[in-house]
Amino acid sequence: PRPRPKVVVTRTLPAPIETRMAELFDVRLNQDDAPMDTAALRQAVAEADVLVPTVTDRIDAGVLSAAGPQLKLIANFGNGIDHIDLATARQRAITVTNTPGVLTEDTADLTMALILAVPRRMAEGIRLLARDEWHGWSPTGLLGHRIWGKRLGIIGMGRIGQAVARRAKAFGLSIHYHNRTRLPEAVEREFEATYWESLDQMLARMDIVSVNCPHTPATFHLLSARRLKLLQPHAYVINTSRGEVIDENALARMLEAGELGGAGLDVYEHEPAVNPKLKALDNVVCLPHMGSSTHEARIDMGEKVLVNIKTFADGHTPPDRVLEGLF
Ligand code: 8YV
Picture 1 (cartoon, rainbow, N blue to C red):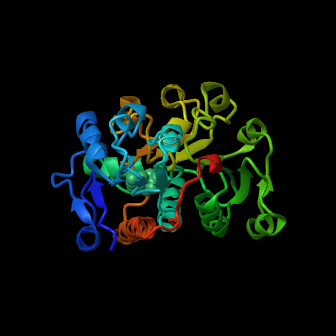
Picture 2: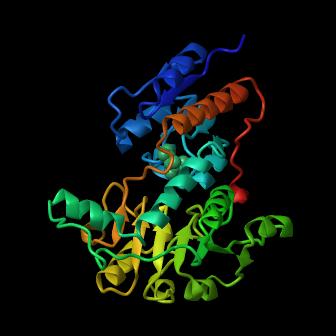
């Protein structure tokens, strides 16, 4: 029989996943659930046959240079793989897998929650009550904006973008999208979606913009200072994908100057740091990267990791192998 692969896990995973993992593999768990520093990551890749990292681990060329020749698989717990240097992994013939599909609906739910929360000024209302400053209902108090009938521009119409579109359509928003490739006609028809080949042109026409594309070299600061300026002054910006897709400082400056309607953010450029301007503004809802934070999604993600490792260890192609050219 093949020896059990040595699997090093960087963070604490849901208990049933850790239990099953220990039954299947020779597992080194991280007990204190603090992100590993670079030295600890280098140590992990030096001893692991399989590394299970998360979004908080920067697996760059420096870390990978410490990897032993036995490291053959990085089975990421999470969908986004922008924290892993894929080019170096490929050079070292390390396979990389992720956990697509199982967090789509939950991330789309959180996106929809932000699309509702920001125009309806929920953060402001919550803060008002928390300060004990609510003096009762008023015909003109805390008026927000209706989302029904407004235009939503989705940047990145993959699984999550489409799940957002499905929800938003049910809320009466009209669906617009920008994507590298246009969707098949049948899918466009399902959402009654309008395709914009030009992101610039789409931005100038939207009431709400939702970022749902992965962070890649091509999407870094896709919403640059210049593009953010194309938005209408009442527009709302929603981001549940990766902070790096937006120039966070430019966004904060514009929000502070009152040049945008507001923002709903779950992700940031330098997590866990959040631009203090964003946290202070009443028309910005800041969440701590919790798009996939449901018990169900995290179990499903863990199960995907298990299947990917087991399949790989058995000598087959793991179902969620990430091909670099894919993004
Ligand atoms: C995860 C995410 O919590 O899957 C992703 O890409 O951003 C989150 O849903 C995180 O990545 C876990 O590694």
